[in-house]
Length: 469
Image 1: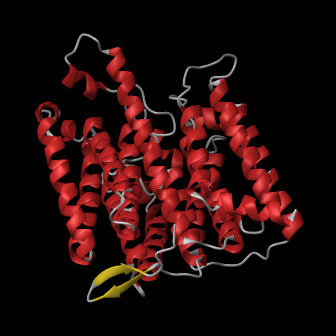
Image 2 (image 1 turned 135 degrees about the horizontal axis):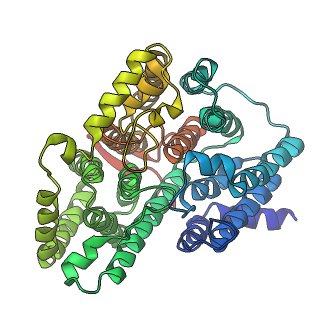
């Protein structure tokens, strides 16, 4: 039994395990048509419950909850129902049943291993954010749909306390997950583009590849996909610094660049360019001679690819010019109007905000959950208290990452800052997948015994242990 468990744990530590989990996620997500009587797809639901089963078994077998993180990440990226709303989440049975079944795993883990819960490094900021979600329930008009939405940050707090108390972090494992997550997200965007290509046979090739699906991607829209890609994109550089001669990683890095470009997401492009420039500058400043030589070869190869496909770049430029609109509000997809309404709500409820359903207090033609800006969202929904809670959270992250700064922390900060800058004009910080991602990533950083796999020599990074895989 002991030998079998060791073999299983060795497999769980491998990239193959993470790849299989994310492959299940992608295949399940790719089924999107409704299967009555459920508005969710049957195969999508089967995939989710399969991942819940794997998660439950791992929680029952291992004290270290690190191996469950790939399944938790998969839960965030698997739903492919395009009309999810506050009402559907609070009313439909499938999400509630799935969550109830999911809770069996932590209960089994508590019963078997009896872990001691503790306050982690980031506890204060997360608990303040959880309180800021709840306070408006006290004085705003009662709506049943407001309860699950306002309780979601309490769930974040529970997830953080559980994993920061039960994890034995591993930064190499974290970057494996980030890399495979980036490939998963890129594959979903490419699937979105491929569906659009099939739906528009009358267009020429270069316009067809830009058309897209004509629907959102279920758990996210195309803008969201791009900032998650920007967040995880620096993970490629981690493995390039480990093994610069492994050109597969270099070539894979081209895929998210192409996916974001073809997505036509202007906001997504902003965040991704910041992430791309960040890792380029970091690579030039901190890469050693081996890294720079192979990087130069790759740069020439990439330039050749984009030169060959330059007609696609011309079409992208046409789309950008066409999207400028007649005024700034039109160019921003009505964001200025949304921000104006958000500030009006903040003036009405300056201390603790108008609550999460205040977004429905004004007319808007389209699907809208949030105020499309981190700071406007904080002020409108949670008031000054919510903004202070957010700044405390930022301060804790900044302090933790900047003290004893190393390669792993630097790469995290590049992706994090890129996504947060995107968040100035979009729904990032308070999006459910993003919040849970941050909690899981921070928990792994916090609990990792080995803080880095690299050493700085003459201001350049070199791998400490060539046997790290």
